Length: 292
Image (tube, rainbow, N blue to C red; front, side, top):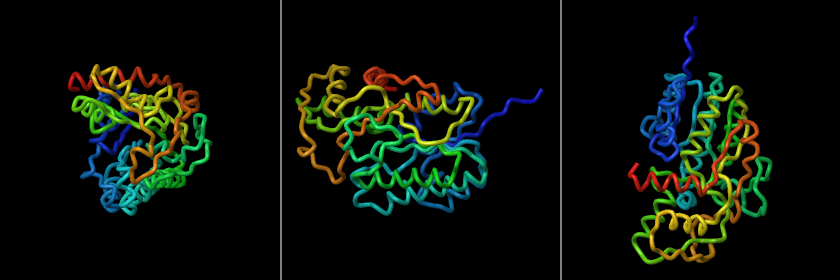
């Protein structure tokens, strides 16, 4: 009787929200040996060191969660953002292709321009309104072009009990003052990184690996104002949440006004059940309050 095969899985972004959520559930999946890579071990701005690591560490699946994510800063650090979010991804895809390794690349709803009024499918036209979105879109293109065993997951408004994110920022601001002002004219869906991590592992365990572009966000829709209001309710913090237009909160990078994504494809192809955003937010806030 032959031994059961253990699949080698590398994950970039070990200190990020998604990386940490994936690390929490790896023990539940013994068919996969996970290697979590930090920025120091796998620097996305150093092609030689990336190539060296991939040459020395053959993997079956490479989950690329790390990215340059400072949306506003990207407007003034264009070369750095492009190097990390596009060039590095193309190189990783190409090197993995030579070894017939699969690549799962995490992308963003910011590849869209926000002019839609209905949930966006994977076939919706892309047209980023900021440099971060442009670099991630080029990353998608290079990944798909350089490795036919690639799966791109576009997600949105990611938060977690780990790291810095909108949920934790709002809770801190709400505790620190009588009111917070939050934009109410940007529509999307918050995504709990714990749910996305579970979906990725579900894909790993699927009988058939189907490459391509997929959308994943929690079900339902919200504005940032709706999101903040729900955080207030679930946290029980006595604070006024005041709705303002985006024009009242100017930022270096423009944001899409509407980037709600349609999850139909990933649910159908991979048989995923996706929780509603308020349900997952309640779970995350409970973890934050417990100090997880």
